[in-house]
Length: 359
Ligand code: KG4
Ligand code: ZN
Image 1: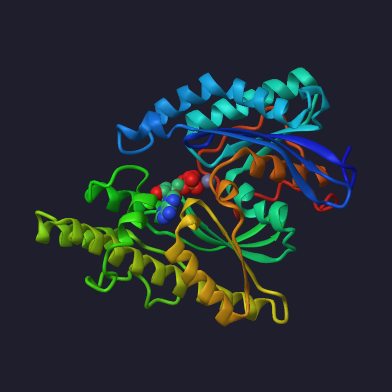
Image 2: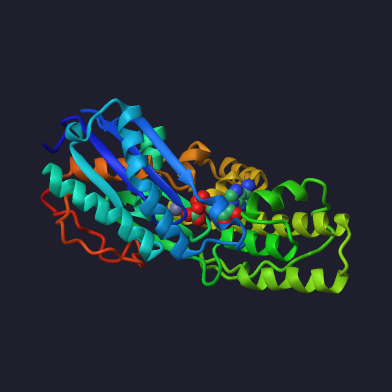
């Protein structure tokens, strides 16, 4: 059953520290609705280590995934038999976790006689705005999470062009490292944002690496080092010092993201003259209000629409995987049961697993 027939898809996400499963329905008009979306975060398991421990993450996925899938089906009011296909993240991500999710999906697909759809995690982030806001192709995505910072031109399902990415740390990772050196705990992003509210964003002028260059890439490691050197120079830090450093760091990254987004929108305008411009934001850092305000200003100035899906769908979840599966299912883009997990899987490399006559 492909094409415009309605389809119910189970989605499984285990590529980092969220064990997640969801049931999503795609109707005959291509409109999606979330029937259930169950996420179990492993924050507590990893908190003591100041970051995600891959081996612990994989083990927790093994322990909880079956229950999460059962709960997702229960909440959706569907049995596994009623699902049309099983979609699971097959990469990129921590290989142990990806294997747990993909192997479970393969076992379910084989046992139930249902098709498997191996989903690229980045594609799942990229297509979420079509589930939540029905955004039409083409559009620009800014993915800013703990593992990725990139601009992607989304031309169609399976049709992506990466316009720029980080050459060192991801933006969420930079927040986490700054939080660690200011002893604010993990995950760092929300902690830095909270403390920055009482800080002076102008007290320190931290560097904006790469910003003078025209390329759409990011670099955050030099900024992180500048923050560390400043903290060392001031030590011992008063509460006000910590707040001022956090606010100044956040101001620097907000400016970097804003300038790059303006450039990316300019490129979009020149490649798609006359097209409506949409900037879709995904990833945990999308929760940051200073960055959000900077992006809103850029979009207003450029005449673009800013689309930020609800936070629960910006961070890792099963609904985005189920939806990416539903979009692929509608195109007949199914995968074999011997599909191998891919710890690295750039969106725009070999991704075109959709036959030209099916697309
Ligand atoms: O997308 P996500 O939930 O997980 C993956 O990385 O896949 O993103 C988590 C990242 C963490 O690095 C976290 O510190 C960051 O998003 N983050 C934030 C905020 N909330 C989460 N960064 C800045 N400000 C926030 N409010
Ligand atoms: Zn993610």
